[in-house]
Length: 482
Image (cartoon, rainbow, N blue to C red; front, side, top):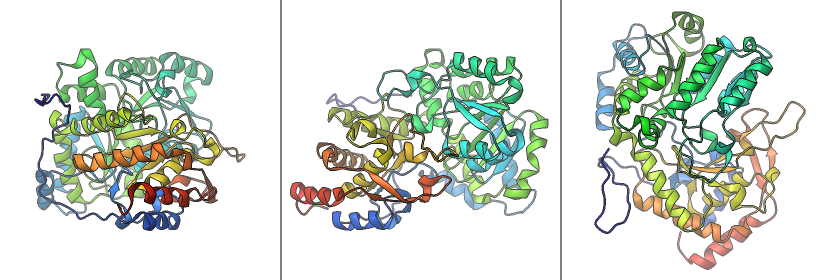
């Protein structure tokens, strides 16, 4: 991967693509944004996209597709069963991952449901470097529980450690001894740990983790949804891998896993997902769930057009100039916010820029959901939609107590090849203004709290009139600006 240096000395990521199709955006006045936020119950998931200027909610299903991926959709085979499109996708997945079998599913959480239903029984424990919301929900749904074994350093928001998503091997040994290997159906490793800032694991750590698990007869499951970012970081941060190609790193990572599952809404720039494996017994154990819940075995609930695009997108993931764009833009945004004193997760990870809401809003109690409050405030100040990744994204214990999240983050996703540099700088400017006026921001309370995955559709209200004060200060400082 070549690094382009500017004569001025400025460090600026250079897009290795050009824009050929555009979509009109809308930036509402600040008063209208406050009204829209109230109507959405202070939940950015419930905002109408027509009221959003920059949608940094997620990178799931909103990445820009290449001309080749779009073109491939025109040759899709619409057959319900035995589609040639499926066999092209299967061949590509098995080629890249080094696997023999592939099961299609409509997205990553469908894979998580099938994995939990197939392998987890009541009382089981699933160790992992860190949980993802839907992965945890499916495991607890069938009576299991998760143990997060990421290294302690991985939970420090600011550091220079290159692989904060590494699993702590001593913790894993202790977990196996304490729970008994017969009660551990698999160890789950998440590439680019979503909830702690998109932080990667190293190939060295994954290899050691897999050896420890396999020595105890325990299966290893890889959540490869954010694999492309993790591949980039292994390439640029892990000395032993600097001379390996992305294709070689992919094979080396996947060789450690018994089952690999992914959401193609992230990996592959399309909308779908699937599971890959070499063991025929695992394939047979999960196969029946596909026609029961997803669709036939050769489409798995996906549009064949998306499957064709996914095949192209997975191959594009082997191109360093393609997968480096997201991390480089994120690194730039993180660096610009650091210059302005805004507390962000470092080193810059994948998926998006992560603001340390606990530090940004140190005066807001954890039970008043500082990351959610910051997401609400940022939308009002800018029209930028981010996602809370903190206590609100947890779920209450059976006795009603609320666990406080290890990290309280506002995630600002940068979907790949979507935003321009001026839009990133606009977001940086509004975040900086908000940081200077952070004392105005208060917390939130639930008014409608779902029992499961409450962050998706729960509704909240501000504690006090802090949003009115924020709008008034915006007008005072920025005049008639939107």
